[in-house]
Structure formats: C-alpha cells, structure tokens
Image 1: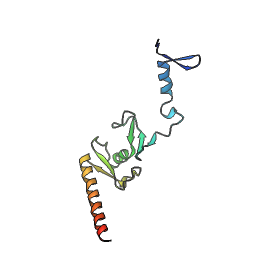
Image 2: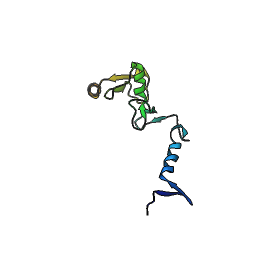
Image 3: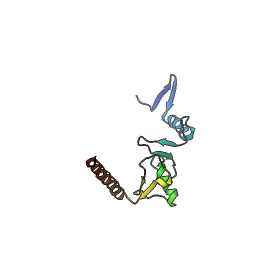
Image 4: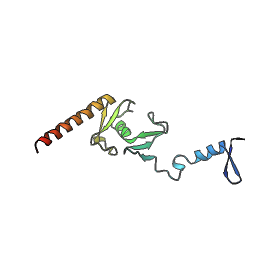
Length: 129
C-alpha cells in the first residue's frame, strides 16, 4: 500500500512535503558543494547562475560569453543571436575575443568560409612540398 511516505532512516518516516523542504533547504549557496554559481560544460563553455535574467534557462543558467556580449553592446541579446569566439576557445570570454552574429545562418556561412580557406591552404601546401 502506497501512503506517499517513504522511510528515510530506520524508524523515521519522511513525507513528500518534508522531502521538498529538505531539497529546497540545500539549493544554491546553501548547498555545501556550491561553487559560486559557476559551472564548466563538457564543451568548455562557462555557465553562470543568473535566475532573474530574461534569457536564463529553466535552471536559471546563462552562458558567460552571452553576458559579456550583453555588457559590451549595452542590451540583452535576442534568442536568435549567436556569440562567436574568434580564437575558437569556448572558455575565453574576453570582450575583444567575441563577435556577434544576428542569426545562426550568418554564423554558419562565416564558419564555412573559414573551413574553405583552411582547406585551400592545405591543398596549396600539399602540392608545394
């Protein structure tokens, strides 16, 4: 029979409401593993906890390079705008290393141009050896 209660420790019964309170009490800077709201993704981007930001994810997270670009241009970024790292290092969020594209299509064209130039250079070098 499911009463909505689970055994937390031997002899103690914890209800759903208590579990929720326990979970909320350990969120954010109250959690002993809190690292200042800063996380590095597997791709090398830095996520910051900014829950009140208009473009924050459901978890209240915004990528740091987007915040840096917003500060640089003096307004919030639109959801379709893309911030590009000029040197290709995702964790290098210096303002002079960031470039703003108005949409993903323009960013894609830029990336394809770079790749085309790179492969032309490789072909030329290959035949001049």
